[in-house]
Length: 83
Image 1 (cartoon, one colour):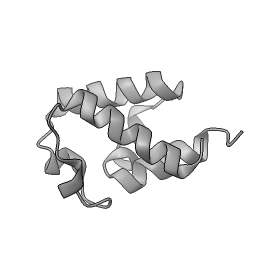
Image 2: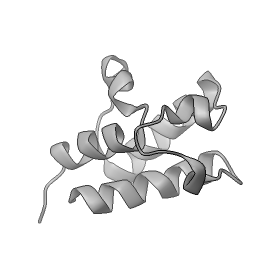
Image 3: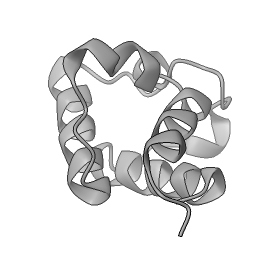
């Protein structure tokens, strides 16, 4: 998966987890947990859904890398094949 594909997938997962989320108003480098007013359970649901869609293990130690659209896209793209 390339970075653009990862970015789009992350936006889809966020929309599934936070219905009605205005992702257009969110800067790619903004902490989306704050911007979308996600609580801990929302974020955990996001991580689990993203893991399910990508088949990547997402250890808790990596959660800080998953707080922005850009950071999350970089993380996913770097760990998935580009086939």
